[in-house]
Length: 131
Ligand SMILES: [Zn+2]
Image (cartoon, rainbow, N blue to C red; front, side):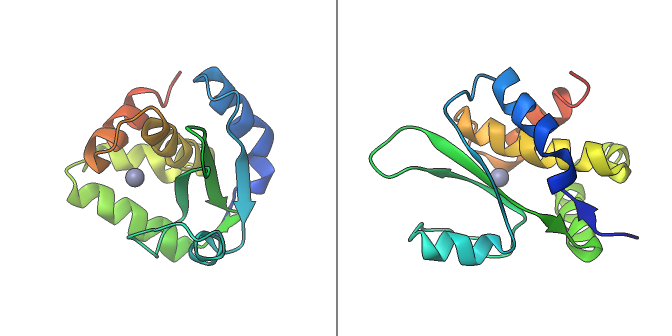
């Protein structure tokens, strides 16, 4: 399996954020999400992650931070976590690079829309995957 290239899809991802009304939010691609979060002094409970939605200081606007490249083992561990949360059959849909990345960003868009629960954010992302 190959590393997924998020940078390649940046235009489509920005369109996706706009489509869901996040016109003020930025999409930030980074080499290391945990390091970026630490450098920006943001409290993050899960240091092993490929994407995160962060609130700007003194603002309600949230930006979405995503890994530039997602290694194959990371892709597998994200899918395993989803299976663990009960999305057994649905994770099969994420074997496609674009759909995996789209789901990842939709999950963070869900958080920006105040869907805080992980399972509900995954469900919302699956529901909107074909839109
Ligand atoms: Zn989440």
